[in-house]
Length: 93
Image (cartoon, rainbow, N blue to C red; front, side, top):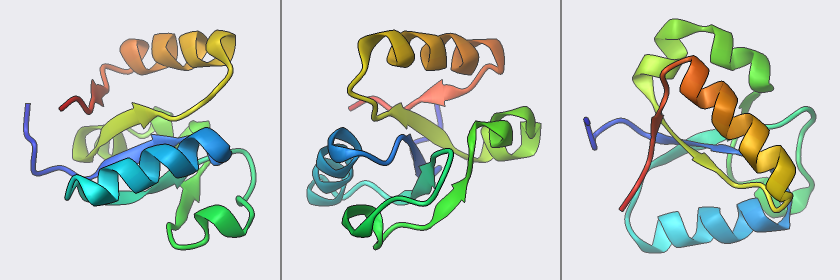
């Protein structure tokens, strides 16, 4: 696993804000987030990189590591399955 690749957060709600803050405090590079629509002011410091359709772009997936930053367990499981399907690397520390 290449730890040099930046992280993309999936989600833009309150949980994503906490995850983004933890990444920043841990010195991890976060490229931005994926969400159906732009986040409110809490995620304003990170760019929205698109929605989950970006996961169909193999080059995008290969260039990043991903963190599922969703509070809803069911949605988190579905997104995890999608990431597995496209062979995305999850960021772990």
